[in-house]
Image (cartoon, rainbow, N blue to C red; front, side, top):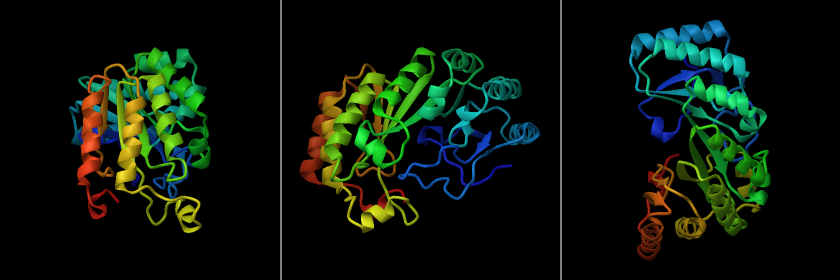
Length: 287
């Protein structure tokens, strides 16, 4: 009953995945090639019921469930509430249900709708902020401004969701790295999520960004430049008990801590990485 490929956050590696939608309803971001060959559509109710029943047969008592694909919140609220009720009935002992939450979908939902969705059992949302820079967000066709990103994140926090935000290191290239670092620190600080994850840009052969490399309008950061961008970003973050992770397989170097508590230690560790130049080789990064 799964339609591949399927993507989920690294922290959902052991979760049962239930695929309520297929593809991405927005699907215009230039940095993402995940669903470019997978047209978006919602699944019929009968298909979802069958999918959940089959999943329960093979995985009867999951601790965590992740709802795929890219933006389940694009579903009508009444439909999502119906699916959540079915999931809770089928898996009564599940400890956490999570999904991606795109900023456009969050902004379209009223606070009352989000409150109902949270009460129905959707505990955690992951939002790809990608960048806090207006020029970078426009360049990659994210479809929202930094202020809209902040509004979406603060809205989710007010409604009581556990909230995780993601930034992509190097997304602005050499041309916009400072705007990317400072803007991202500002947006993440304004949201103050529970979790802040950092990935590093990789452009594969089918990436919509590849033509920009070819014509020279985008020049990627090298490992040391990525570290310097990260140092700037972390130095300007003002967060309260936010779990920070930069240990994704795409990253040149792994860092983790709690911001702002561990800011000085993280900055020292980043500086040491720059000084010693010991990075994960390109062949070892996620492709």
